[in-house]
Image (cartoon, rainbow, N blue to C red; front, top):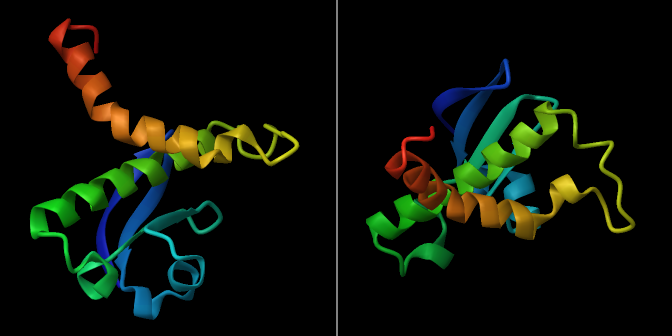
Length: 122
């Protein structure tokens, strides 16, 4: 486990950690790249250097995937801290936990922020 920082999400501090798959049963058992623990106020990302499934990626690609995963988990945490996690009920679970939507935000956020910056509306 490596502490790689912390982040303030709507007034709540979250610790950010990088875990090896071998030391984190939740990562291993659910085959995840990351997760957030809303009760422990932690965001966990997988150490890709410890996983043979990612040995084909070069260091730049691993870094890019880790950043995308971190953005993904931060968005989950923002929705949770906004009070939307438990009240957003759907027949297949809360929309705030919809992985496709969270991925979309995590992947598109840098492009959206650049566009905002380009027109000066940040």
